[in-house]
Image 1 (cartoon, one colour):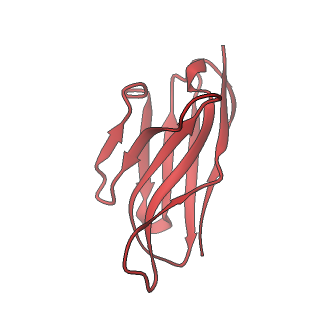
Image 2 (cartoon, one colour; image 1 turned 60 degrees about the horizontal axis):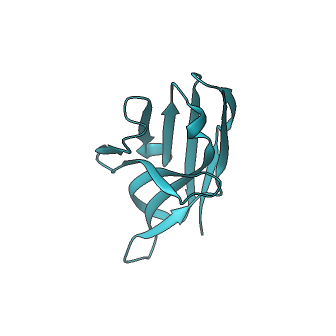
Length: 121
């Protein structure tokens, strides 16, 4: 059993900041890449940012310079610092991680339940 639990979403005015957290727990042997996706109403889920176990990061063009992804490997936790938020950042944000379970032979993709971020204009 592996769980990803997100926290930190909420309502913020345009120009404000939020910090999302996602903690992985359970029967975890190893975590490879971790990332954040988002899905706005009527739109497909899209990749926002991703970070490898070694710290290499990737950002969608729409968030470069505003969002920062980081991770604490000792805590199996990934963070997303979101600054200069815009109304178009409004979406449900999902945590994702590639995890190898104890006794497993491959990495599986796991998802959190999602946290709502709403940016008012």
